[in-house]
Image (tube, rainbow over all chains, first blue to last red; front, side, top):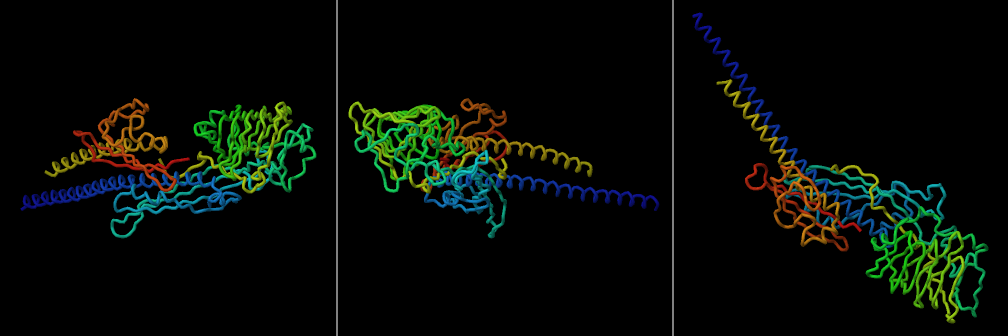
Length: 393
Length: 131
């Protein structure tokens, strides 16, 4: 009897132990399979996160390409949004390339919603020494591009959010006029001004200056004229000629000047042959040598050549459609014409050196595109990101 | 018997865990092998890649399965030894919308036959021309 009771007790203990171990094994198995499932879900989630991140990067690239294109187009919404914008202004952007092609990045059963917003973070119209610019539209700003991407899972019929990705980037931008504005507007309002030369030209002179209606009087003290002295408004500074050529601002192969804003080059520049002027811009260099045609592609295009250290030599009788400026602190800035000068634009120099030996008749007519200060603003957005958050690598 | 079951379970768990770790490592390697050309092409820009659509760029060939080298002779990019267990196929498709141009880059990565690990992995991106 006693022996039987002990045997039952032992069997009961073994049974309890077996049940305990079975329960433990079940719990362990369940936890292991849950862990494996979680690992698979994490893999899937990381894959989706990669897709969302790539979409955000693509949207930012399209947004930047659109901004770079549209800020040069006066007919675009972005140009007018950025011209005169104040901090906090926002604009929703349309990105048609992304809308058409995003589905190529998505797995079957998934869809994507996105938004792209521009925001002016800040804008100041003074330089690093707190000197206000002549126009309150000129200045420096920070532009933010805010991208939001939501991936949706539509496999179960409805739409459930899989992942959200945001990408916030900021870029510097600058608004500058190419007409070196003063309080009255354009500074390039007279067809001919000489800072340190008292020559006078009348109808019998070898130089004929074509006046226009409402032409302003000559400045009382031309020696005080300073142009393009706010170097913080120069878009490019201290470049070499090779840089301008590499950036196709001077496209020697196609003989096109692709102008935009104020560009400074620390070299002498020669324009030989027939050149076409596209866009509006100022090229500041040590000196210039023009031996061919400089022709505007359209009436709105505008070229200003500013020699800061030497002279501008014009060795052609062909028409030159440009504003020529040759002034410097040593008063040696001059425009030298070796043939009959035919200039459409304006001329500003310390003194003038026209060839009279071969009875050449020189001619200067004023280009009225130089009057329009409102059309002279150029917006440059830096391609370099100065702040970025979101869309982890 | 109970102890035997427990031992079998523990061994299974350890072997599964080892296999899972190896699989995760293979997945990670494949992911990096797939992302590499996407990041390089994004850096180069789509204009540069478009210029080399027919002949490939650096030692990235297009539209063919290519073995992964530990060191790229053209670019100097170094990869771990285990990456040679994969091969990669890069496909570039030009895209455009009015004056906006872009490329769709698709990278497929699969283990070389005989290698254990994962199935084919695909990663894609769109790179837009920057003016």
